[in-house]
Image 1 (cartoon, rainbow, N blue to C red):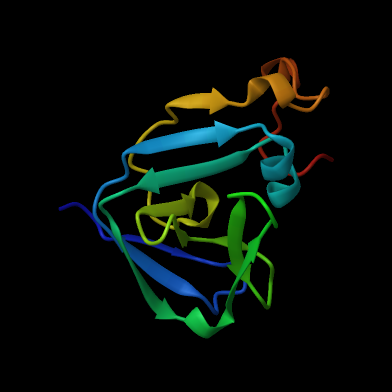
Image 2 (image 1 turned 60 degrees about the vertical axis):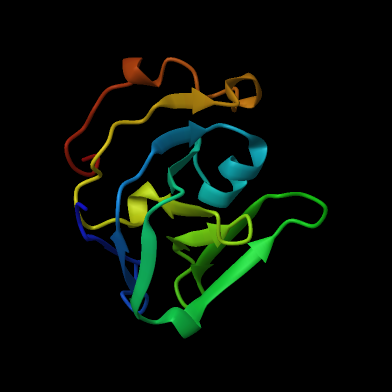
Length: 135
């Protein structure tokens, strides 16, 4: 069993470890994931086998479920950072890739829900790359 994979929120109050493997990694472009992330897509790792262990701050973790949907996300009540979430009555662990401090062990499997992506999210690889903040 690899790992553990360590992660935290931005303020550092909520910290966790993931014990086990991720089966998939999707970049989701649906409007809900874009709103969750405030970006072009959500970037989430999924596992039906791995186990989530909160090291600190579990009491700071809040979960929002969009009524009448399966869409939900967990986040730090202090800084708002996305955090892991156990869904589908404990059958699925969803881990925001950006919350990991350890290296993400797999590459994304696919961009999903591309038909509903933002209009500005096209050919982003052609935009200049700057290693730091713009001068």
